[in-house]
Length: 304
Image (tube, rainbow, N blue to C red; front, side, top):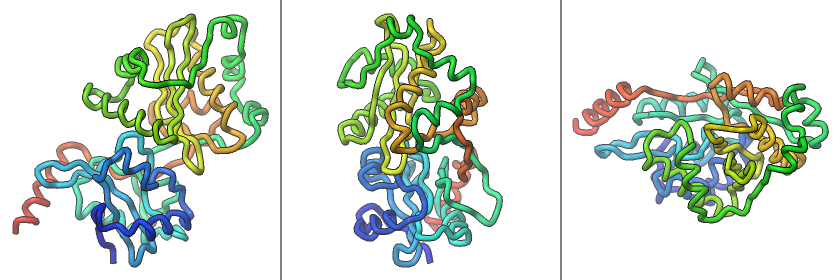
């Protein structure tokens, strides 16, 4: 009932039709986006004749595909005209049975008939900036005021090219990515998405020094905070709030703004103080030992 297709086997006309008619949010499932963040290391799980589709991306180890979310890809999942929890469960079970899964994120609109591990994100629904700002926590409204100090010493710049200083700031200050080689993958991916016209980048300088780097994925249905990097030492602690407020002034009237999720309490609190609404999406996540065990099992089954 569900079949797996490699990249070259995909009927992209049918795939795009499935996405365009889907009831779920499909910004991260678009072919052009996935081609940039995954190359051709992605394929599809397909239900019937593209009645429902589920893109999956992988890295290969010892000939075994390890499923993981590509750099800067927040949610994928199942796309169909009507979200069907039972069909979604078929995809979920097929993925677990046939692949070694490091981490896979379904989209927020995928419902399941059983309990599945969840991750939290935050979104601000589109509205006039004035109405959105009314929902800011009182301390956040105070944080984003453009005082004389901010007006005199803060500079926003979205004309970012191949600037060595900005790249060095990125590599030095990005958090949650340990290996330098992986940090460079993220940087190069950002540049490719920017060249494709779907990633908006801007920096914030304070007293001439670079303090914040912001990357916004401009999806068709929402804008997403792909990366938000701040210097380890901030002379003015309000700069992160001012940076997000600057982006909301530009975009919130036309699109939702998604903070791209975090289970870190301090980050969650930061998002909530902008009046953002929390939502949950299902994930499939395995630790390294479980992945190794699954690889061994798949290799044994393959060679029987």
